[in-house]
Image (cartoon, rainbow, N blue to C red; front, side, top):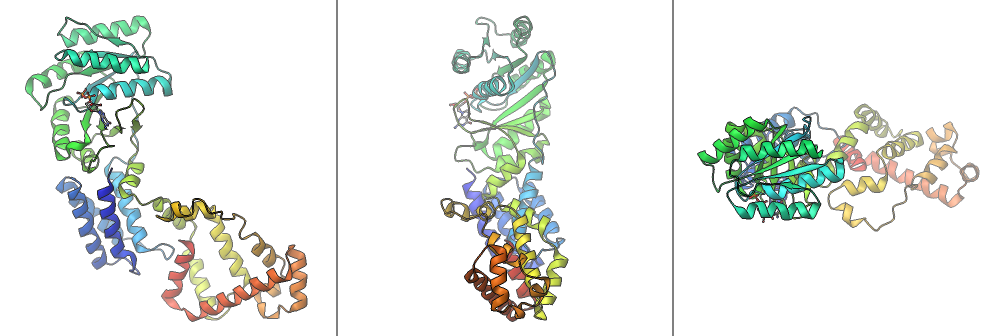
Length: 440
Ligand code: GDP
């Protein structure tokens, strides 16, 4: 799912890839593409516009770190805004009543019956609840049968009344039964129509007022795109529901509904359905959904970690030292320690989009820096700040002290000399970019 949108976004971020910083011009270009990608993914026009305006403001106001590239920075901003748009935090169910009552609403075919089963299963297996499913879709005999089939799969009881068409009565009888049998959650599956109609709305409204549910959930098929948003609005106007369930996110959906619904009805998406099986249910996490939409590996946490670890002042200090050819082994050690602070090397590398898969089977030694550190630590302070004095006898002493051999020491000093020469050659902003490359 979302492949289309994430591909498009990835392409638009590429525009920024070669750029040194975020400017009014390159941001405008990228955002034009982002907006088009959102619209094509069925995101509501107004939502897309507000979204790109906010991203633009944030991007231009951002102090771009040398540690991350502008493209990466934009991914992070877009990611955080997307997550925000979809509600920011994950919102759980409020199940306080004894029994707690959950009322399902939504159009026919949206996936209410299937979701009722999935939720009952989840509450039973993960929260050790004892749910009762209630068949209030009394117009289609097949619907009651379907709920019974679902319930049998997960071993949850169903309350139904074959010859009664009064859903308010059925629901209240079910609640009574739950109290006597010790069911702590009552999940009421209701009738849907193919489109919103007055009779259906009246029925579910009356039902809601009578049973006073802890949670009224609106179930919607995410493949219906913009219609999903309109239906959500109509149901919310009548029912003032508590949360949204987006089903069929496993299908060929363009994903726009997930992004727009929250903004249009200002109600949280609480669950998503990702298949026909009873286990295909996920609690909705805005941030994780944004990850999936962007499909950009874990670049967001990479940028976050770089932001946490990278010290802008330190970078400037180093730059000055390099220009004066004063970069020494202490600085070298400091750099290694900074990189190490960012975490396991393989973990870090795997956060870079595309790299994760490539290095899956390659063994990257976590202790790659150990020998280097040992060698530097075995140098005297004078040797570290004046590498020129490292003659053969000093090198032999260092090899012994660090538990390495003279070849290792020679290799490191040679690498250090080369690095120093190279650093001297690149100056100014080029240097900051290189520091960025070292981090990212
Ligand atoms: P209801 O009329 O609202 O009760 O909808 P149903 O629960 O009967 O679902 C309608 C159809 O959608 C059924 O064929 C379900 O198997 C299917 N369905 C429901 N949820 C999902 C889902 O998350 N993914 C997929 N692929 N199919 C689903």
